Length: 150
Image 1 (cartoon, rainbow, N blue to C red):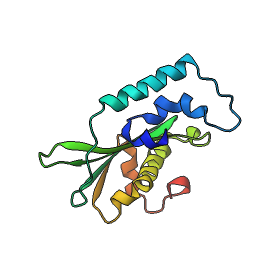
Image 2 (image 1 turned 30 degrees about the horizontal axis):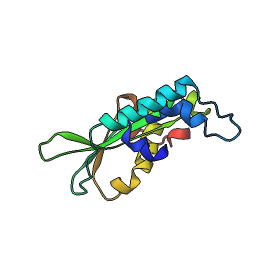
Image 3 (image 1 turned 120 degrees about the vertical axis):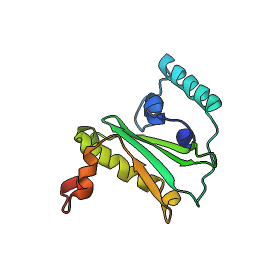
Image 4 (image 1 turned 60 degrees about the horizontal axis):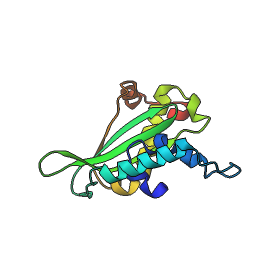
């Protein structure tokens, strides 16, 4: 299932019960809910717009978000018509420790994680990050960050 993750917005949230079935020590029980979610993933994959190829001569755009349950992001660029087109989606569930982070730390974690995730696209290229959390702007002015934010 990991191969389709980048094609489905919110993949980790949709597929979470299915992913749990693949964990070591978990009994495999294909429930009606699993079938419903599997069908939903297939429907999304069939109807989703085709992803654009990256243009390494153009600026990349990273849109990030974070909730206690997971992190998500969209990698996009502007096309020739100045319309934003999606290159890839990514998401991941948070672990038990991350679920307890304050929201500012989670939003910061999302940015760090997604920059690392899309490193091969972003290295030596201009990119901008879009987030819905205004408090992160203050981190840019913090000359001596502490703890996880350092």
